[in-house]
Amino acid sequence: MSETDLAARPRALVVEDEEHLARLVADYLARDQITAEIAADGQRALELARASAPDVVILDLMLPGIDGIEVCRRLRTFSDAYVIMLTARAEETDKLVGLAVGADDYMVKPFSPRELTARIRAMLRRPRSPQPGDGGPVRRFGDLEIDPAAREAVVAGARADLTKLEFDLLEALSSRPRAVFTRRQLVDRVWGQDWFGDEHIVDVHIMRLRRKLGDDAGCPRYVLAVRGVGYRMGPGA
Image (cartoon, rainbow, N blue to C red; front, top):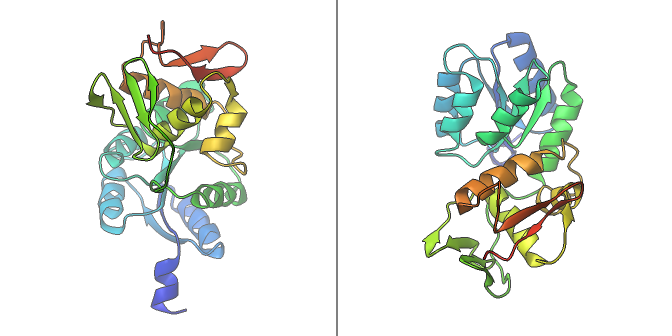
């Protein structure tokens, strides 16, 4: 295989201190034409992430030294790579904490490497970087202005520092401001129709979106929850 072909492959970073599991995951990724590097601890993971700019990071929660939560938090300061968190525990708090610091999905050990590679492929089919184009006119909801073409959200004159996922959720909700979107509809719009992770990932990203918009979850103005259904835009007043 030529160097050009190798360079064109997606790049993954497997952060796992169990050598056998790390090698197994890397082998499955290689079979799926994804180049994988391995890091056995958090410090090495951050060094490799800075050096090689992976497209996706498979990140164990429990690591020697810097744990997976802190690795993910630091990773998000310089990388927009997809992050799949691995946890040996099924507790909801583990999942939510991982998602809250910037992970895109999680899997509970033991897991199927085949399912993991399928999830990664689903992620990679959807471009991570913003796509240019005419998104229509600026949308206004009280003090909140959303510019789909510029991919900007401004609250009371200050630009909100949103990730791609957070902006995509806001853009989807504001595209039909009177409509209620179910979690599944938002997953299809933002993560893609072939996504098969936990739909409650939407709730965590909505929580982060609200926080960045200064939206009080107890009495929101911009993003409203509709009990038993999903979410819709509010008037902003």
